Length: 200
Image (tube, rainbow, N blue to C red; front, top):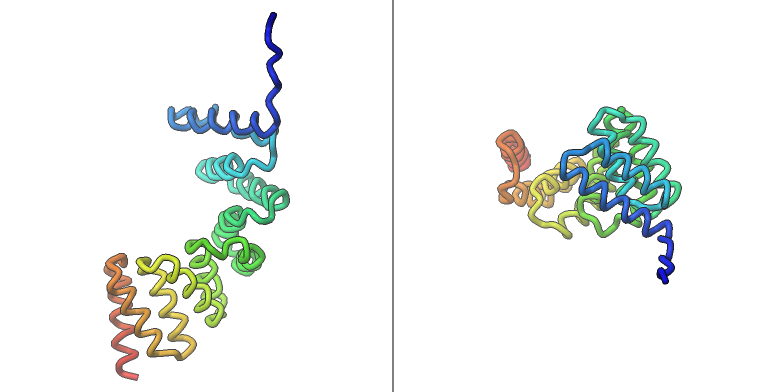
């Protein structure tokens, strides 16, 4: 007698499709991978990795609107999945909609509070909006979590200097300089800022 095979749950089906799609992608079978990811989302629309990967593939293929829709739907289904917000905010920035990007990131700030890359991006958006005190707070959290990121120390220094906190700005610029992570142009910029602060 044949055993009754228990049907897969939607979650299991989605995970299977996702794993198969990832395998296809490694084999260079991009079309099959995308079909697998769509099948995963059809089975379980809340499958975040499938949605993120499909959005990434759509973006790589120049299908920006599709990527945006996938991420917006994902956020509606799972507002706490802050990496959707981060990904979508980058798309908004590329489209010149920085205020929209910042509002989206602020909405996800609680969920992303332990992710240094999320915090640094939030800091950069605050900085571009001229909200330097908020930028200082976000960058400070980011460098506390990952102290070796020179670009984040640089971002912190810029906003501290804008806030006229020159001693702390000088410290941040020095940390950026010592990180070894800056390219020549950024190193030169840091040296200029340190010299300017000394001469103030």
